[in-house]
Length: 193
Length: 193
Image (cartoon, rainbow over all chains, first blue to last red; front, side):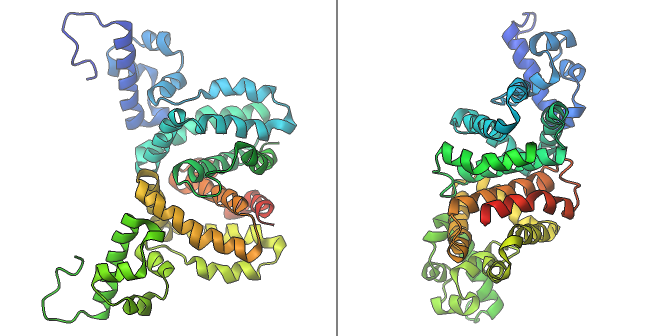
């Protein structure tokens, strides 16, 4: 599959192997969803040993993040969330979110993922499972926040990012980041604390 | 164009004329956006007198609603908003929104519109202008609510509807309407009052 262009007899370099794993992962996540794609099956798709997948990426979550070219790693946001005092949680989260979305290069893969989730049932399954497993479960566990409230907070942020950066509805498309923080932080605060 | 299948010499019936107007409108809204498509130009596209467009639909807003098969008319929601006491505005709006989105037949054209606005710059322009002209301006005028706060409220509702009905993230996909009202009404209330 992804390696079919390789010359027979030549051993693939680490970059080729890495790319072959990511190509196999993209295919498998799209086909089986996030939960259904195991590291073992990804390794089989790339024709490598599962230990190599662990060696390159560590966890399935990391394979997903790299395969989908996500511009942030939920696991890296967790320490930030843990260190933020309760009364600043809403503001901190909206700042992190805006920091990612305001950069066109980091925004593009998120818009692409959202777009496919809206037009394709399999992509929706993949995104749903990743959000549940990697984002919701973790955050809920960490601070004991009910999942339904986290969904409401994610809904608020995704909806505003859509209006601001994709559909570009005014005045929210031109509002300053400080205006948005003042507007949205109390909402997130109410959901998450 | 839309009438090219009509037999020459036969006068089109009212249904045919209506459909020809809607077909011309869909084409023109997609091409010129909501603001750029005049009733005069729509009439020209359908090869009818502009007075006929007024006769069938009244306003450009109504032409848009019918052409896009929107499941609600913003103008009809206004009396409801006007009659709602301030302290029940959030709850009333989320009930209206859920009433529309929970019905698969009424939801489908909204998801289709959102989907095209996410993938197509012209569709985004069309949606942006319609939201600004027909929804935001009106509501702001009526109750003196700052537009930025209305954007935040629309963002909250669109984001939650996306997660609940399109991506189907749990637990918000299975939450009861009463749970959602309890969750979201205070947020809308804070933005709109």
